[in-house]
Length: 142
Image (cartoon, rainbow, N blue to C red):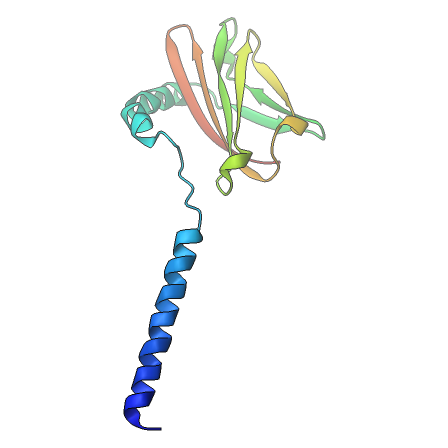
Protein backbone atom coordinates (compact mmCIF):
# COMPACT_ATOMS: atom_id res chain seq x y z
CA UNK A 1 0.00 0.00 0.00
CA UNK A 2 1.38 3.35 -0.99
CA UNK A 3 1.79 6.33 1.35
CA UNK A 4 -0.99 8.19 -0.48
CA UNK A 5 -3.52 5.46 0.31
CA UNK A 6 -2.41 5.39 3.95
CA UNK A 7 -2.85 9.16 4.17
CA UNK A 8 -6.33 8.90 2.62
CA UNK A 9 -7.32 6.23 5.20
CA UNK A 10 -6.08 8.45 8.04
CA UNK A 11 -8.15 11.39 6.75
CA UNK A 12 -11.27 9.22 6.39
CA UNK A 13 -10.87 7.83 9.93
CA UNK A 14 -10.31 11.35 11.29
CA UNK A 15 -13.44 12.69 9.51
CA UNK A 16 -15.43 9.72 10.85
CA UNK A 17 -14.31 10.45 14.43
CA UNK A 18 -15.22 14.14 14.07
CA UNK A 19 -18.64 13.19 12.67
CA UNK A 20 -19.23 10.78 15.55
CA UNK A 21 -18.29 13.45 18.12
CA UNK A 22 -20.65 15.99 16.49
CA UNK A 23 -23.54 13.51 16.60
CA UNK A 24 -22.81 12.71 20.28
CA UNK A 25 -22.65 16.43 21.13
CA UNK A 26 -26.04 17.05 19.51
CA UNK A 27 -27.64 14.18 21.46
CA UNK A 28 -26.22 15.29 24.83
CA UNK A 29 -28.81 17.15 26.91
CA UNK A 30 -27.84 20.59 28.15
CA UNK A 31 -29.51 21.41 31.45
CA UNK A 32 -29.75 25.06 32.37
CA UNK A 33 -29.62 26.26 35.94
CA UNK A 34 -32.87 28.08 35.25
CA UNK A 35 -35.18 28.17 32.25
CA UNK A 36 -35.74 31.90 32.77
CA UNK A 37 -32.15 32.89 33.42
CA UNK A 38 -32.52 36.35 31.81
CA UNK A 39 -35.42 37.20 34.10
CA UNK A 40 -33.52 35.76 37.09
CA UNK A 41 -30.47 37.86 36.20
CA UNK A 42 -32.53 41.04 36.50
CA UNK A 43 -33.70 40.01 39.98
CA UNK A 44 -30.22 39.04 41.18
CA UNK A 45 -29.64 42.28 43.11
CA UNK A 46 -32.81 41.57 45.10
CA UNK A 47 -31.37 38.17 45.99
CA UNK A 48 -28.09 39.76 47.11
CA UNK A 49 -30.00 42.20 49.33
CA UNK A 50 -32.09 39.34 50.77
CA UNK A 51 -28.90 37.33 51.47
CA UNK A 52 -27.40 40.31 53.28
CA UNK A 53 -30.58 40.60 55.38
CA UNK A 54 -30.35 36.90 56.28
CA UNK A 55 -26.66 37.19 57.25
CA UNK A 56 -27.57 39.75 59.90
CA UNK A 57 -29.68 37.06 61.63
CA UNK A 58 -28.77 33.74 63.22
CA UNK A 59 -28.36 30.92 60.74
CA UNK A 60 -31.16 28.72 59.45
CA UNK A 61 -30.99 25.19 60.92
CA UNK A 62 -31.71 22.05 58.89
CA UNK A 63 -32.40 18.80 60.71
CA UNK A 64 -33.69 15.51 59.44
CA UNK A 65 -34.82 12.19 60.80
CA UNK A 66 -36.09 9.04 59.11
CA UNK A 67 -39.30 10.60 57.77
CA UNK A 68 -39.07 14.40 57.91
CA UNK A 69 -36.83 17.36 57.18
CA UNK A 70 -37.27 20.39 59.42
CA UNK A 71 -36.24 23.96 58.71
CA UNK A 72 -35.83 26.20 61.74
CA UNK A 73 -35.75 29.91 61.02
CA UNK A 74 -33.79 32.38 63.17
CA UNK A 75 -35.30 33.42 66.51
CA UNK A 76 -35.64 37.01 65.27
CA UNK A 77 -38.47 35.82 63.01
CA UNK A 78 -40.64 34.85 66.01
CA UNK A 79 -44.04 36.46 65.93
CA UNK A 80 -43.87 37.35 62.22
CA UNK A 81 -46.17 35.96 59.59
CA UNK A 82 -43.72 34.21 57.27
CA UNK A 83 -44.36 33.44 53.62
CA UNK A 84 -41.83 32.08 51.20
CA UNK A 85 -40.51 29.16 49.24
CA UNK A 86 -38.25 26.20 49.91
CA UNK A 87 -36.66 25.18 46.62
CA UNK A 88 -34.84 21.84 46.71
CA UNK A 89 -32.49 22.08 43.74
CA UNK A 90 -30.85 18.97 42.29
CA UNK A 91 -27.71 20.02 40.44
CA UNK A 92 -27.50 16.89 38.31
CA UNK A 93 -31.12 16.34 37.26
CA UNK A 94 -33.60 19.20 36.88
CA UNK A 95 -36.55 16.80 36.88
CA UNK A 96 -35.86 16.16 40.58
CA UNK A 97 -36.20 19.84 41.55
CA UNK A 98 -38.95 20.51 44.07
CA UNK A 99 -40.66 23.81 44.94
CA UNK A 100 -42.53 23.86 48.26
CA UNK A 101 -44.32 26.79 49.85
CA UNK A 102 -43.33 28.09 53.23
CA UNK A 103 -46.22 29.71 55.09
CA UNK A 104 -46.13 29.64 58.87
CA UNK A 105 -46.45 31.60 62.08
CA UNK A 106 -43.93 29.39 63.89
CA UNK A 107 -40.20 29.14 63.35
CA UNK A 108 -40.15 25.45 62.43
CA UNK A 109 -41.50 23.96 59.20
CA UNK A 110 -41.60 20.22 58.53
CA UNK A 111 -41.45 18.53 55.14
CA UNK A 112 -42.11 14.85 54.52
CA UNK A 113 -39.10 13.09 52.98
CA UNK A 114 -41.41 11.15 50.68
CA UNK A 115 -42.21 14.45 48.92
CA UNK A 116 -38.53 15.27 48.38
CA UNK A 117 -36.00 13.77 45.95
CA UNK A 118 -33.10 11.80 47.33
CA UNK A 119 -29.45 12.70 46.84
CA UNK A 120 -27.32 15.79 47.29
CA UNK A 121 -29.52 18.85 47.04
CA UNK A 122 -29.14 22.58 47.46
CA UNK A 123 -31.90 24.17 49.52
CA UNK A 124 -32.66 27.67 48.28
CA UNK A 125 -34.81 29.16 51.00
CA UNK A 126 -36.42 32.54 50.43
CA UNK A 127 -38.97 34.12 52.73
CA UNK A 128 -40.60 37.41 53.56
CA UNK A 129 -41.32 38.62 57.08
CA UNK A 130 -42.94 42.02 57.27
CA UNK A 131 -41.44 44.12 54.50
CA UNK A 132 -38.02 42.42 54.55
CA UNK A 133 -36.95 39.66 52.17
CA UNK A 134 -34.49 36.96 53.22
CA UNK A 135 -32.57 34.34 51.25
CA UNK A 136 -30.35 31.44 52.34
CA UNK A 137 -28.71 28.53 50.52
CA UNK A 138 -27.85 25.31 52.36
CA UNK A 139 -26.57 21.94 51.17
CA UNK A 140 -28.53 18.89 52.26
CA UNK A 141 -28.12 15.17 51.61
CA UNK A 142 -31.36 13.16 51.67
